[in-house]
Each structure stands twice: as structure tokens, then as C-alpha cells.
Image (cartoon, rainbow, N blue to C red):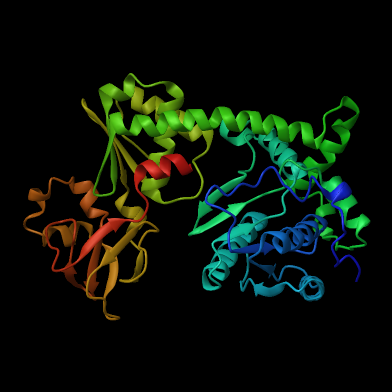
Length: 422
């Protein structure tokens, strides 16, 4: 395979070797992970970063995820491994071990991919991972948002960088058209693999890709739509910051609930209200996605009319002074995990761990065994849905309900941080 040496001059490659989308304020990382599928975008990313890293110093390690969804996937992983060996880049293949997959296949595969890569990166001591998304991916995401009648958040496209699961993720070529990366590969004699699913019209992204081709005669390009998404993302960032600042004035948390001052809430702008409401629902229910727009609209109507409601595993209670978003007890009734795991995806408990102990919801029965729960100042609804330590049918500890017995419970992600990340 050719293309493994470095030319004396950057020439046509100069712009790609200095990706404008990638900045590290704290300095260039000593080690970077790179996700490589074998497609053109990630192969160009791999080759470019091997060059960049050779000049900047540090180590580069590549990873390929075999989703076990196509028989060709294993061969594609081996193709990437061979290319990495020619470049002198360490490479690992991760396998998504799954059974029957129900629901949105692409979404579940994406979630699994990010989870596997994050675990791999942490185990390898890598804090930064780069991804090969391009302006075409950004444009397709924008068009899919239009199809969903999305608002500003849905039309702002993919993030350029973010932190999740302890890893900093970046998309250095998100403003670069795919053709530029393919031209780079051709210049260097580098081949790539074509995923047959990229031609499968059953997928929304493939439909968006075809729509983008149809829009070309109007002068609507991937680079242009990516620019629109960038402009919208800047506006969104300002609105998100306004919502974060509003949390300091009108919101507090209490035993996992979010409590808004209703008077202040009513004096807050409608966009900020909606952002805070969605963030509260997602934070309390620890879900990745917001409820549908029509569901949020019905909930907003109920709040304006002073009516209680339930949505996304949460109870929303409206009083004369407060708006409370709490976990719905029945939503956590069956949740159970070891004491050293994160319960309900947001509660971490510390104490004397024992394999015979489990974390389950306190429930009404457990709360009745906590004689001092009134003194905590927490609402009954919050405490019933709070984590407790059990050994079989015996309640050992209820950290939030006045029965600590040496245990503490804390939320993994503070609410203001959740507002920012949502």
C-alpha cells in the first residue's frame, strides 16, 4: 500500500494538515485516539493525523468497531489494521456483542460505538478521540432536522467538540467537504472501503444524501449547509448560556428533584423556559433524548393552567409558588444494581460495599421505615423514588431519608451542567 511517507512540502495538503475545527486550549494532547471504520472520511483522518502527530509529537492509536451487522465488517477491520501497521500506528478492533436488536438500529449502533470507544480510550490512558465526520455529514444532519420540523437545537448540527464519559471528542474536518478528503486519498494512492448501507434508501441519512445531490443545481452545497448549521449553533450557544444563568436565579435541586420558583419562571423568556423544562426532564429521568415537541407543548399548556402532569418518567407538580419535576416512582420501581454501580444512570452511593447488598428505590414501604424522613426537608415524592440499600427484603440504608447508616448518595452530574450539555 502506498502513501505512507511524508512529502517534503505540504502543498495541496496544507489546509488539511491544519484543521481549523480542532483546537486544544491546554496544548496538544500527548496521546490521541482515532476512530477508523475504513471508509474514505476516517481513512483520510487517520493518514492526516499520522502526519500531524509525527510533527507535533505524542502517540496516535486507532480503533475500529465491528458492529457484527454485516459479514464484511471483520474484513474491513483487518483492512484498517493492515494500513495502520504500514503507518506504524497501533490499532485495536472492538466487537459489539449483541443479540436481537429492536428499534432504531443505527441509533443503537451509534450508542454502542461511542460506549465501546470511550471504554477503550480510558483503558489505554487516552483522553482525546477524533472522529472523521465531514461537512457532508453536517449537511445531511441539517436536512434530517428539517424533515423533523426541528427547532434551533435540531438544526444546529453535530457538535465540533464535547466531553462525555471522561473523554474529549472532536470532529476536526466537520467544515471540510468529503470530496476534499477523497481527493487527498487519491493524491496519496490510498484506497478505502464502501459500506453498502450508504446506498440503502431505508435509512434517513441516505435519503438526505440523495436530497443534497438534488439540491446542487440550486447552489446548495454540503459546505454551504454546514455553514448554516455553524451560524445556528452560535445562536444556540448564546441561548443555552442564558438558560444556564437562569438556573442560578430560578432553580434549585432537592433529593434529585428540580424545583423552579414559579413567579420567576413566569417572568423568564419562553425559549429559556422550554430549555430548562427539557433539561429538567432529561436530568431527572436520565434519558439521552428530549420528549417529542408535541409532548412538550402539552406539558407547557398544563403548567400554564396550573395542572400536574407526567412525562418521560417524571412527575411535574405545579403549586402556587413552585414548579417541581420529580422522578416518577413507578419508573424506577424495578431498577436494581450493585452498590458500586450508578443507579438510575445518575445516583452514585458510597459506603461499605458488599456483594449481598443492592441499590433499589426506597419506595413507600421503605419510607415508612424511615421515622425521621420529615426532618430532611425533602418531599415524600422525591424520597420514594430515591436510592436505598437493601439486603433482600431488609432495608439497610436510605441516605436521603434520614437513615444513612454510613451511606451517602450523590448525583453524578449537577443540574446546571446538564442544562449546558443538553
